[in-house]
Length: 171
Image (cartoon, rainbow, N blue to C red; front, side, top):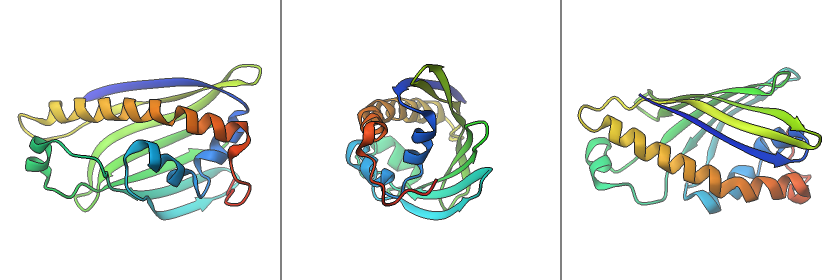
């Protein structure tokens, strides 16, 4: 098991972060910088207290040969997210689709750090149960996830600064 903790600060109100995160077009905006394929939203439930979403994703970038050998050529992931809107904390689970095999468990949150600034934190653990190479795959996932979070910083900040389309808002 490989633990992780990824943290970044943004300018703007943290409520706007969650509006952007669950915006209908945000996943598509991220796709351009992350190398992921189209995201298929399987479920979305929005209430005053919580947001529940399930999304299926498939990487479009090159998967290392030793990973393909273990997992097969088709890697599809399902993300299950549940946001508590009062605490700005979201429980995240990422499964390998079809196998219902848990790969990552995490907690995604935002909290104010100063007037007009907030911190986004994603912390949890990656657990790939494959003999001999599981730890190596976990380290690859962590490196890729860290790179992806860095690549999406500008997209999120632009959306916080006003580039988020009004149409498609769901929160």
